[in-house]
Each structure stands twice: as C-alpha cells, then as structure tokens.
Image (cartoon, rainbow, N blue to C red; front, side, top):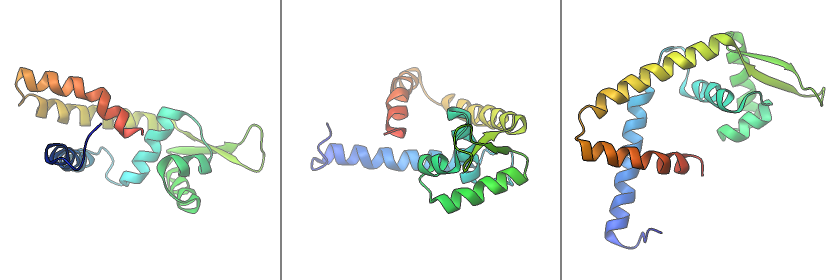
Length: 145
C-alpha cells in the first residue's frame, strides 16, 4: 500500500496521474469520427463491453446524471449508432443497444488507437516494454475501481 506521506510514493502517484492524463489526451485525438464527443464514444464503448443497458444503467456506469444520458442516447440514436427497444420485463423502460454501424466505428477506432500506441511502444527498449506489459493488468484494475 502506498504511503502518500512518503516522498517517493507521492512522487510516483503524481507521475502516474500526469502520464495517464497526457496519454489519455493524446489517445482522444486518435478518433475516427470527429463528430462524436468523447462522452458519446465512451457510451458506445460501454455498450460494447456490457451489451444492452437502460439509460439509467448507462448514466451510472458513465458517472453522469440520467437527464444527460437521455440526451446523449437521443443524439446517438439520431446518428444511427444506437437503437432503443422496449425493456423485456418493464415496459416503462427502454434498453439501448449499439448498431452494427457503431460496432464497425468502434473497431476502426480501436485499430487507429492501437496503431498509435504501437508506434509509441517502438520507442521503448526491451526492459521498458516488459515493465509496461507487466503494468497493463494493474492499470486495467485501477481503471475499474
């Protein structure tokens, strides 16, 4: 467990935060469809990972207010990237599902971002690459805490 009162741990956390934020910004610029906001892309990514979801479930997963998610879903639906269908158990609700067009766009986006990361990795030496490979599961865990 890090001791954030200790200089080395505090510096490591600060460096990690800074590096993750800079890399995240650079990755966000590697978009396939410039008309979609990062939030809209995130919602599509959540649907790709989780399958169908109600707007309320999406709002919780994306950490936004339900009225905001309702607007986001409406925008995505108008662009043909999601479809709304009746909830199988509660007819008062709708479920959101991504379309084939959204799946294809997400796949192209992943390819573009992976190629960008691969080009960065080419600048690492073997030890740095091994350290990054070992850190990937830990970073994944942090992203989902």
